[in-house]
Length: 256
Ligand SMILES: Nc1ncnc2c1ncn2[C@@H]1O[C@H](COP(=O)(O)OP(=O)(O)OP(=O)(O)O)[C@@H](O)[C@H]1O
Ligand SMILES: [Mg+2]
View 1 (cartoon, protein in one colour):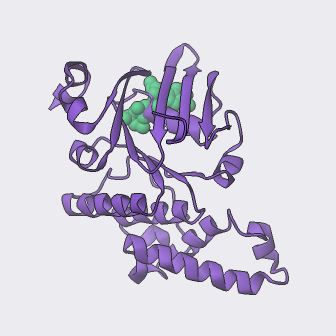
View 2 (spheres, rainbow, N blue to C red):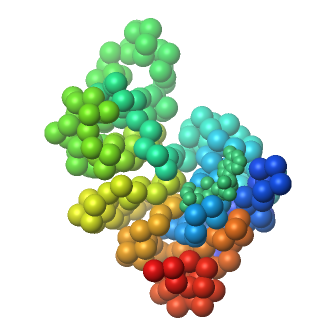
View 3 (cartoon, rainbow, N blue to C red):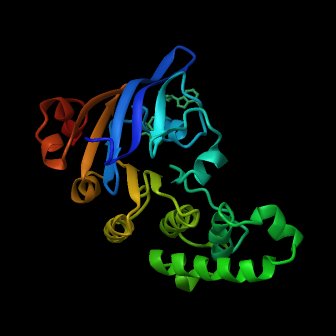
């Protein structure tokens, strides 16, 4: 893949927890505008990779480039501002806030006044607040939650909370969206709708890195797939190539 088409370049990333090598010299290139999935058995290091990419964990070695700039070791909020947003394996929403407010919080990662200014009601904040509210409503409509805007986040079903998390991540206007098992806990119909949403997000020019166990979803929507096993990157290819790979079948796809 040429440097022009790579938006994220992960080179030789290692991360140890005590004696456990969660990631060992992992290198993955994510093409701009693609859905690139990372699959592999439980404990393979997928969430650790997302934690390292999003600045929640520092890698022991290796480099991460976003848009050609090295971001290794930068803090999570800095990485958000540079254009990388994430969701969590266990949906993390502000339960007592409304669905709309949850998305508005995500917008404030980008606004001039930010969260503190909004809380202090500084001059100019009201107009900005209106714009943020409109933008948040637009994002809720996009993920299909417009009707739940005023409900508390804790009161909506888990499948909806996952969509809410995606809307909140999109509110920071990311170039790259990192999703950690967005289909977990979703039924077949919800998973199909999620797939359509992810394709819609890709059409808007946002690159997606998807960690997911639902192989039907992964094979349906991915442009590229990387396979992790015991912290090592063992295969890389199109869905058809991955499904035909004896190594991948042996460690993962052969399970069921
Ligand atoms: N903060 C931590 N401290 C110690 N060990 C950890 C920590 N986070 C992850 N690990 C270990 O690192 C390995 C990789 O975990 P990780 O959560 O990245 O796997 P995963 O591929 O996301 O698995 P799953 O599919 O079950 O979500 C596992 O053995 C896990 O127990
Ligand atoms: Mg995980």
